[in-house]
Image (cartoon, rainbow, N blue to C red; front, side):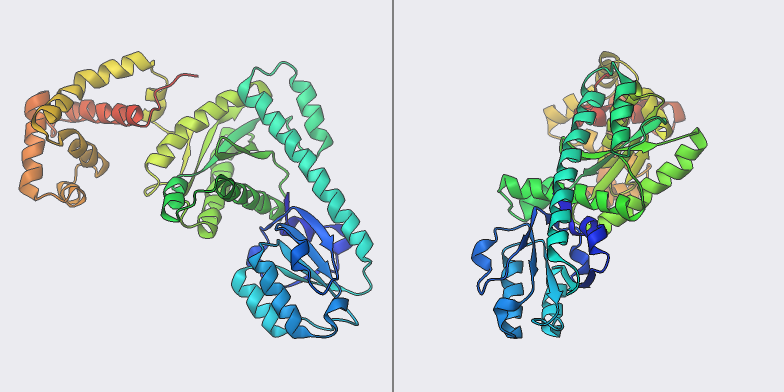
Length: 409
């Protein structure tokens, strides 16, 4: 499927004008129908872009209002009204209803041939579906298996206007709060959940279209993956990071309850390195998802201590955690205390006991007792820089273990 925003840029629709529902241009168009029957609703299923001349309305503009209300109820992508002898102008009431529902209503001059419009839209939908499948296949080859013939992939992508000859950087967009949103909204239909993810992917595509960027993007394992060309390290840090940050702002403005975060992997100098960039992006994404309220975009090459920890073998990290933090876990299990969670929050609040106590809903004295008990059990002093770093590294490794992110490429 494609969006209404993409369709209005087609050559045959140069004279098309949107008069209502501009905020619904992201709607997915499954197909286009030209129907002029007295009762259109039984003939549509949802997702269509409907074209009418109004000949069947017999000049009854109230019937047009009723029709638009019915189309909104059936989740139609939008409507193109061929303005002419049968509908001279679109009633204000229709415009108000469409704006309130974010339902795109377009006005098409009578002299434009509808047959040319429908033909171009249908051809474009088929072309984009083919292209979308090809892009997904590209990502399968780049992310799941070694790339044997990079030149062939570059050549095939070039046929569709994608330049993969330059170094690339993998960007991953993740709706971190989508699961909570689905639960809160009591959405149980799997197709509805997939539709939410597809809507996110399409909005990202629309942003790229509006900015004139031709980039490989696909929905991959519940996340949207994008290949972003990059040049020097400085350009990547300044240009790509800023670009992704701006996209995140737009995405969270559009989907405020999704809690969308993003990550950037390292530079893939050739297509053979894309999988490595993707793995690095996943590691940075873990940090973005776990600190979404603080920072929503992370770049792997700017992770500092986390980048170092990500490269340490799993067994060594587990051993370190068991040595530093496990004694606290044993005390918690034995005496039903919360020393480890308290320590986690304490470091998240940068050692600020007031904010830590507030987050834990504890009296200050209770928190002081827990911190002293932590020092007693571990033999580490929180006011000693080395001891503090030792405990904090244990906490960071513990977070990685908690989120199941101890992994190697």
